[in-house]
Image 1 (cartoon, rainbow, N blue to C red):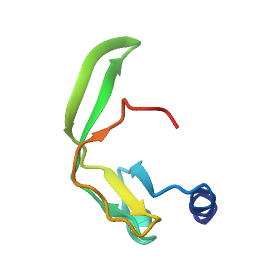
Image 2 (cartoon, one colour):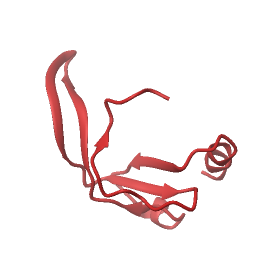
Image 3 (spheres, rainbow, N blue to C red):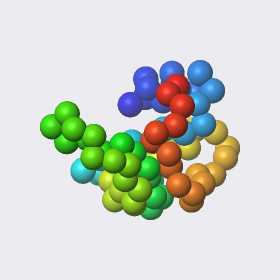
Image 4 (cartoon, one colour):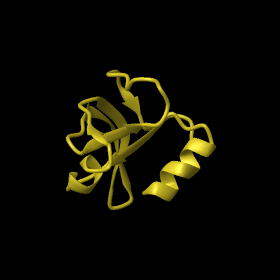
Length: 81
């Protein structure tokens, strides 16, 4: 995790966002659970089912900049970095 965070900081990334079924290791390393709604493309067995938008309980974030995490919607359909 330290290498990923160092690479992200060097690249000017503001935050790391991840999804974890078991959050313990991330909580111990400074990540926080967040309750944002997320928007994503639902796919099942190679079939597009549509766009979903709802909270994801497993969402976690670690801020790398001095900014705070925004409570707005997280668009996972957006521009690919």
